[in-house]
Structures are given as C-alpha cells and as structure tokens.
Length: 72
Image (cartoon, rainbow, N blue to C red; front, side, top):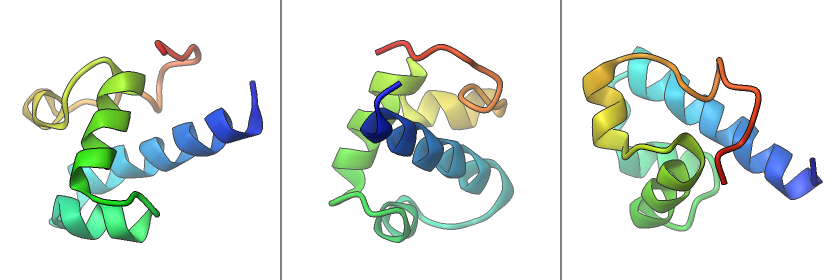
C-alpha cells in the first residue's frame, strides 16, 4: 500500500471515531485532520468507505476500522 493511501485511511479511521464518539462538527473534524474543507472530507470518505458520512452516521457502525481492503 502506498504511503499516501495509508495516511488517508488512517485519517478516515480517526474520522469514524470522532463521528461516533464525539459531538465535533464536520468542519472541526476536517480542519483537525488536514482536509481542505468538509466537501473534501466527504468526497474522500465516500471514496474509501463506500458510503456517505450521513449514511455512516445513520448506521452507527465502524467500516474502515474493521475493513482490511480498500474499496478505491
């Protein structure tokens, strides 16, 4: 796995944790983890997790933390 992909996946795992275990806004999460804005975060999340952030929050279960392979 290329280093860039590894870093993105690690950041997205942190996004999952923050979404399910905190009341941080998407803006705060995006800024904290180095995404340019919420749109960039949302697009990247959907690419790697296979669902939107809204769908993820509604399901309330981790995806990237339990998945070994990348969908992208």
